[in-house]
Length: 493
Length: 74
Image (cartoon, rainbow over all chains, first blue to last red; front, top):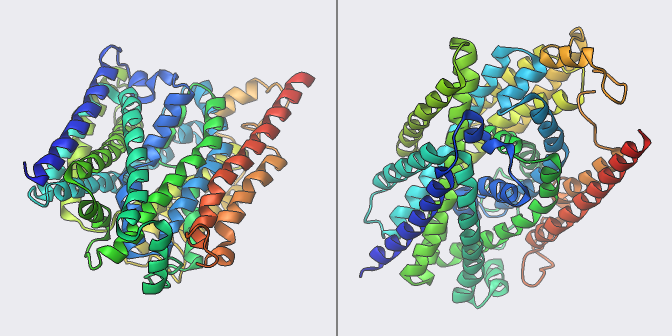
């Protein structure tokens, strides 16, 4: 057997086992809209931990983080800081969000905005912006999967073909089983990824240098400035680091799918304990960095840094092991991609189409429409993946710059009664517009600052200023409920 | 009030990892001294992942204690 056949057979076997687990998890449950999107709100601590790890540890942390360690150097450390700090933010905002979700039957982010601000156009805008910026994240997974399959085939399978196959598998997988399937496949995916990452993080430097320490000594001699900021870049210095870490850690739980996952928890307590434990998971990123840094020394000159991890694995280990790494990588692309497309479809059907175009639509019809949208969104992402080329990290940063613009609406909405619909709406629209202008004209970073962070500051400023000047009026179902029933502590809105 | 606000003490405990891993970057972003061969900046971040869990656990204790005493006083 040729090396490519061995590697590909291994990947195929791992993906097949993962898909089988997914299908079995969905088989014996009756699927209504709530079961399909938030798993019937019954996920205990273990499933929750896996689901949350499953969506944060994507092919981005696998290929993208090593890719930036290779091509950018020190700035890649932002990833380790932001994921850890994102959990700190989640500790404070997810439990109260879950409480509101249970009390008012919320399923999506847009439901929250509708409840808090009582304006269906704001809620629909939130859905549209969420789906728009989720697409680059989805595209990232498809691109990553394409890289894995073509690298494992020793470039025999063209990347486009590999992407078509993976998109079909993802869509079929989501179609049959919904969120519960995804949580169970995460078990396999996280187990494999943990083993794979530690094995290559220790193994790759060992094979070439005899250990992690000697590898960094060699790095200090060959490229003394590579592992600090700005590394191999000129504009990713400390200002960029601080502004980007703040932007992305505030944004870690602003993704539409994170809200869906939050509402699927069994209790607020589960979410809080998870937030305490999750940072421990980010240590695995250090191993990914080790591989990317080793690649700088042993595989110089790659045009695309995202290929660096698989290139050194291919150079350092037998083909079957490349297959195991590829299989783990494939699942880390498929599981999150399934979550993204599921959330995006639910948002489009339930929070964009129904309230604006067909208010009398039944839940069953919405569920059917969501399934059709899974296919539509998959095809759009496939198209984007095939016809654009950018690094995985850049794709993710684009997504973050967009979704973090929800942060003021969520945080002020939860904790500041004066936050008004008009303030939040104006802040969001201006923030998103600024992101679009700066990023489309290649002005990220702008004067050393993350463009998304500057947009977030403007967004916050406008939201607060307008809320202070606009008359205080709580709108929407929250107002009616809380005005008639004083809360137990005697305080009202 | 829409929801319970976290206590000031819990917020301060949550702020500590932000200072350590983000705002103070200029102080720790260097190669020397290496820790077990790992550059100082990466070793610093590695150390702060379990430390973040530790500080969040403290914040968790603070919140639990406060909630129990609130429930007890009702």
